[in-house]
Every structure is written in structure tokens, then in C-alpha cells.
View (cartoon, rainbow, N blue to C red):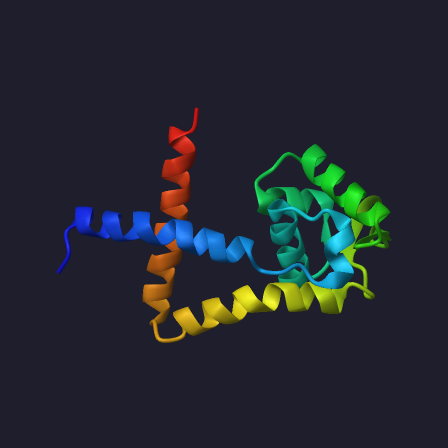
Length: 148
């Protein structure tokens, strides 16, 4: 059994490789002209996994201010990547979705990561997956607390 320091060492060596590989996932040719950043990946992943959402729902899930989410959505909708539509149930709300003509490219872009996570998580029990995800969230929080 390893000590906490042994595990920290392994993770310090692993994390740069993990992040580096994730950054090298190629953006599909159809999306290269859109200047997509890592923050856009999470936004599009929510829309792919959860379906159409309001700007406020996206902001909450991304843990950013609604104005920031609105700027991101506005930028991507002007480029035709996202579509905004009036909520038929409440005309004051705007529903955001991925434009159908870009959906296949976005699905393909995110599929590499999703498939790798499926392969890594499949052998684990539900409790082990929850522990793993909880640990990553705790790490993210601890790093955020140390940021200046």
C-alpha cells in the first residue's frame, strides 16, 4: 500500500501528461475556424449530455456568472455553433442548444474523451466511481483555494 506522499508523487507526474493529452485532442476541421477554447468544451458537453438549457442553467452548471455564460453563448451563436430560441413556456427565457449542422462534429470531438473515461471507469463499482469523481472535485477545490 502506498503512502499519501507516494500517491501525490504519482499524481504530480501523471497530471501534466493527462492534461497534455487532453489538450492535444484535435478539433474537428468543421470547428477549427471558431476559436474554441477549453471553456467551450464544458459548455458543449452540458448541451450534448443534458439537452437544451437556459443561459442561467448553463451558468450554474459551469459555475460562472450568468453574464459570462451569456457572452459565451452569444459568441458561439453568432458563429452558428449554438442556437438560441425563445422558451415557449416563458417567453422571457432563452433556450440554448447546439446547432444541428455542428452537432456531429461536436459529438465526434467529445467522443474521444468520453470513450476513454468509459474505459477507465467501467471496471469500477458505482461507489468507486463516486469516490474517484469526489476526489477530483476535492482536488479542484483545493487548487482553487490556493490560487492567488
